[in-house]
Image (cartoon, rainbow, N blue to C red; front, side, top):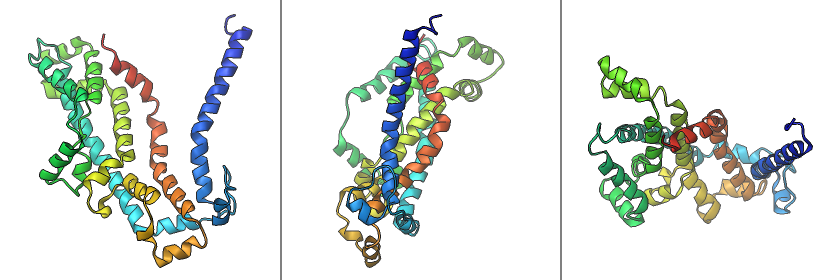
Length: 293
């Protein structure tokens, strides 16, 4: 009877409309960027493009398909996501497993736990971080984008809390059968932790794909820029360095804004393709890993 009441129906209607409007507010900017990338330079310059292309043209995308610098930057970002996610997950798992143990099982667990927590409260800053990367010989390498932030304390705490909620009887029975810590971690803990692992993979992968500031800092040569750093340079900085004769000829047919919009839209496609398949793990993973029984 409560579900059929007028108040309940009114609440469900208002709630549904709110989420529809909220979803549209997230989609409209992306649709606008796509429309600008497919519109003529005249329509874009006149400000006539909103959510539908005007003077439909593929010239911006044809130009990007032949742009070596853009695809090199995308390759570097893809490599960064694969290597960075793998390294971060490996280190996060290896750190979270011993921290999930009680003080009786791991005597120094509080010391290492506080050691990690302190890093969340205090940071060395940008200059010391750059000096570490420089004097370890990582500048202008893919590892400069991966190793400095490979271990996130937030992810470690999230995963260790999830590990603590796994029944201890399972681990004790495995020990009685002769299993060691490595086998218990790989065949028991990881098998029972797929929701939180999927959540962390999405967090880390999206973080690597969207990161741009570290590329500007640790890469002296623009050839080594990841995609987001490359987009930042063409969207914010002057384009006088890339104003070649072919590019100037292209601008007579399509505007510089349409080319930039096309590059931004292509850069968002990988995340748009992968994100929906892992989104279902978000709520369950965060809820299970954020509360300790």
